[in-house]
Image 1 (cartoon, rainbow, N blue to C red):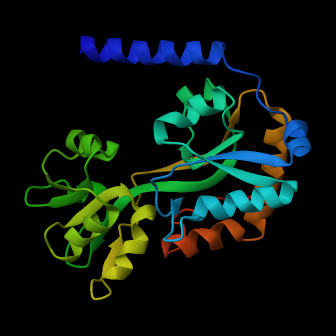
Image 2 (cartoon, rainbow, N blue to C red; image 1 turned 180 degrees about the vertical axis):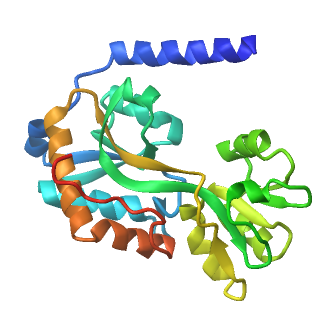
Length: 269
C-alpha cells in the first residue's frame, strides 16, 4: 500500500511539474494562421485509429478528425499518442487536441479542458442466448467464465466486484469475442461498444447485450487548459456533427453496430 501511495504521489508531482513548465498552447488564431491542426490519436486502438495495409491512418477518430479539420478549413497533422501520453502531450503543447476515447474524469480535468462529449463507452455484459441473466450481478456466480484482455483495467474491476467468476485472458478484442463464440467463456464484461464489430465474425452465435449497463462513460475531445476559443468552436463543430448524424454513422461504419448509448446534441453546451 505504501509503494502504491508513493507511486501515485510521484506521478501526481510529475504531472504538476509538467503543467508548470508547459509551453503556451496554440490558440485558434494560431491554428488558422498555420493552416494546420495537430490531432493526437492512439496508434494501437482499432477501430479508433490504426494503419491500413497501405500505411494510411483509418478509423473512427480519423474520420472525425478530418471532419473537424474541414470545418476549420485547415489540414491535419496526425500525432501518434499512446494512452498515458494524451494529457502530457496537451499540457506540453505537442498536440492541439486529443482524441482516442478520452474519458472525462476529475483528475484529468485538473490539467486539461474538455469539449462536450464526442461518444460514449458503455460498461456492460456481452453474452449469448445460452446464458441467462438480466443484469450484470446475475453473472457473478460460480461456474461463469468471463473473457477479457490482459492489461485491461476491467480485469481488476471484475476481480473486485465479481469475485465468484473465473477469468480467461487473451491479447486481442477478436480473441476475446472468439472465446465466447466457441463456448470457452460465457460472457464479456467490458466497454462493449469496442467489441461489437468482432461479433460479425461469428454469425451463427446469437449475441445479446444485457440491457442494464453497469455504467456509461462520456468521452470528449481534450484541449489545453484555458484554450477557450478553440474549445468553443469545437463544441459548435461537434453539435453539427451530432445533429447531422455524422458521429453515429461513422461509429457504426467502424464498429459494426450503433453506439449503445448515443450523445444527444445540445446547442447550449
